[in-house]
Image 1 (cartoon, rainbow over the protein chains, first blue to last red):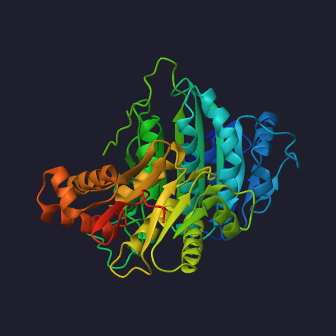
Image 2 (tube, chains in turn green, brown; image 1 turned 45 degrees about the vertical axis):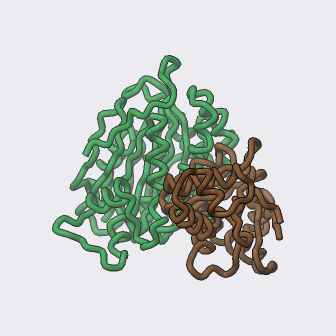
Image 3 (cartoon, rainbow over the protein chains, first blue to last red; image 1 turned 60 degrees about the vertical axis):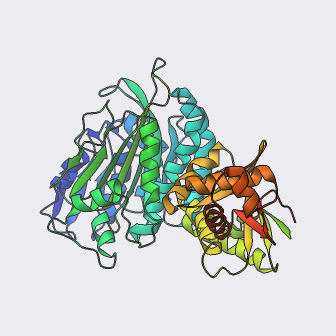
Length: 305
Length: 185
């Protein structure tokens, strides 16, 4: 028997949980069909999470591709189908070739499994990042930090996940929340999540409260790593500093929790618990266009805890 | 003896790809550090090595920790493989954010060569910093000269010099001390 899962028309880091909720009671080896026919828009998080979702299923899942030509064309330009063909039985019409690039897609969906992949990703993003961040009124100083952020987040897959994942970088106008353009990095894997990774730390005191949320707080807020080496855990700390400077948002989901460093322009919750389970880790970085009147280099990000 | 190590060349040898000019990822950083140590293994006695970032586009936190922090930690340890000193050249704003973060996290300091001269950066006590800066100003000086110039007790100055020497920020020649980078062997 196949379980049909409805994919929301607008697929992002929050609405993807609706997909997961529909499979919480479905056995991992059961057949699942993701019905994405009515999807009109998907964020980089949504697309990379769809690929990651397929990795979590023992039985190869099926995916009904969007009906809307515009949507399916965009997914193709984002490199989604090239990756999805390996993971899903795809139903419906979609371009076998991307048919030109999309200037808003700074980095199409790219698999990350080893250190060399991170070199490739960073190398490919650097030139585009400079012009793109300029368009967002961010000065040249933001470019290097952007590449560093991308590198460190991708390295989380290489260092901790235990299996490959995906990264995508895109700009778009975020009308609903911000009314400005943003650049978004999404990195997702279905490997070892933060909780299991930190549990491998020798002598780890799990305390009274030890769950996915506590593991995320340790890793993202306190810079704890599964390695004893005190030099570890600098990557996410550096990402937080960078985003604080450019008014960006960091959101990390792992297992049943999501933690966010929330800037003033957003009203996300700092910590969401008891979410439908999703293996591995899914990271989203959002950097907004700077309004021309904004003061330079202010750090308005706050950690709502 | 003075060495010059172009990090971009070491990077290309390490990752076996001419296209990479970025120092990113821990495995890359560890490989680059190992290659630096192999190059240092070819020399004997006291050495000053210029680590040149001029052709490196960027370095991330993980790689900075592997290349810089772990290199410094190894040579300022109680039993270093040899008496090696390092001078960092070509470090720009693009590199500085990652380097500064690892120095701070590890409590390390290093000597930078910039267009306007050499500077000590990173984590130092106020005493260490003032002694280093006076030693730089005097060029080559003994403990008592430095103590006189600073108006500080010689025992305090000697303690700071011992720490700076252990941290490979000053070199000792007989009774005299010279900041790293001022002496080119």
